[in-house]
Image (tube, rainbow, N blue to C red; front, top):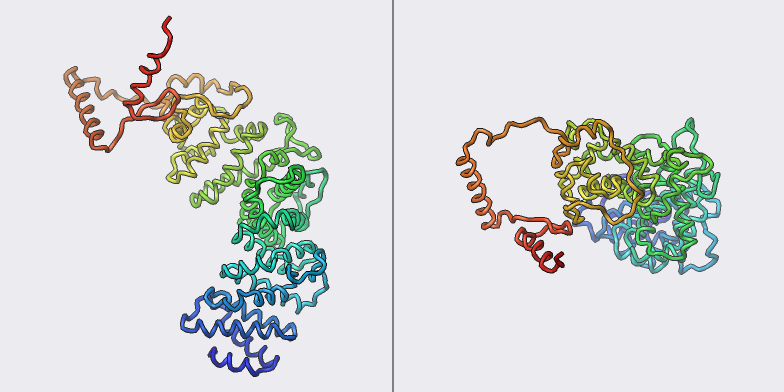
Amino acid sequence: MDLNNILSQLETANEEEIDALLQQYNRENSHTFAFEPKEEALRSKLCQSVLTVLGRQVLPSCQKTCLETLRILSRDKRVLAPVATREGMMTLGRMARLRTGEEGGDEEKSSQEDTLSEEEERVVVEALKCLCNVVYNSPAAQQVSVDVQLAHGLCASLRTARSWRHEVGLFSLRLLFLLSALRPDLRGVLRREWHAVRLLSEVLEHTLDVRWVGPYEAACPDSQALPMPAEDNERAMEALKASFNLTLSYTGGEVSEDDHQFRLIAAILRHLLMLKTETEEKTEEAHSHAVNLLNNLPVSCLDVLIDLPVQGGEEKYGGKNMDVIQVLLDFMEKRIDKGSNYKEGLTPVLSLLTEGSRQHREIRRYIKAQVLPPLKDVKIRPEIGTTIRNKLVRLMTHVDMGVKQTAAEFLFVLCKESVDNLLKYTGYGNAAGLLVARGLLAGGRGETQYSEDEDSDTEEYKSAKPFINPITGHVEEPMPNPIEEMTEEQKEYEAQELVNMFDKLSRQNVIRPMGVRPDGTLAPLEETLCDPHEDNSGSDSD
């Protein structure tokens, strides 16, 4: 349809004609996402005209059609100036039944508490979709949303979440996620003044059908129960993403209240991790969001994941329940096997398991039993094979520095930050990057205090230990000695050639010979050669 024609007709058309005219435009452009730049000014005028119609008293059917048009137009960030105004955002907020800060009234009461007809509900959904598009595409609209306290209206809406229809809940949560993602300055207000974290926790409780059997223990999901419905899963994902944003920049507050809230969230996330959705892909997505949010919680709260007095646990792990830790390990291995997007897909779960193992002895003991069981076959290099240990050791030399460091740190913590234990499982070559970064090339331990080491070496390992190459971490087949049949003159000549090559490369700054200081850090070779002399010169003689 010609936009000039639409604009001229809108000026004089009645409500029914406007509805029919815009419906035709919507049908023709429902799948349009790339717009003609030359019609930019006309589309901007159409935005203004549609907002003018919405400002009148028109029937819900016409409101819905106008909002559909606005939703299509809002895909183009260049024409949003008429919408990204106080008047435009207030109009959309009113259509979405969101009480903004400027409207006053009873803060505890949301207009969504009223029973809506099906047609009125479609208007609310379309308005929420428009707001999501506009807020996402327009920084000006984001600022206006803050000014009119749109997020406050969303929090008031969260209080009525139990009565939500699916799409109303889905797009309300998505809008809250967008605002909290795009406006970091809003997160503190949402947390402190409008209690959004608590409200989102209540949404998750209701959506996931959590039934409490203890202070921080949810009833175990029935193994025969049907998978979580797709709609419930969608809403839970949006609530998790919004919760992640709100806890991302947490700096502390009311300690007892926050501790209780975070422990409650950890318990809800444990329940979610034990659930299945309709597809394996959706289950993995849900677990990914749960892992991201768990990473934002204080590590002291992670005991909620394993402390289940009602369900009970394993005696050898102090009565703790390790079911959810196994779920996290399985999730981690799936992410490793994917072989791509390690930074976003794998490092969060590795970080979570690392910190959990560092702070909670039972978690570390359980994970070590799964990942680093006592060594038996040491004839194969640590990075070769299909076990989870092999996969993690391979990641220690990954091209991505963040992935490499996170994998190495995880294994280091499982080894109680003992260099000797780490080298036993990985070999010096694979662990060199971590040891350089930690200043532990000379051996020793990290800073965290752990319980005393237990001797877990098998007889097979003890008998093979003298023959293990410490660099590769395995027993190598005997290799022929290349200098065995050389004369002393030939050996001396080859040695001199090697010295000359190193000297040439060093002078050209291609390489720089390095040594290890007494504190375990790397330094230029000339410095390390001086260190012992300097240390001894000041020491007392017997």
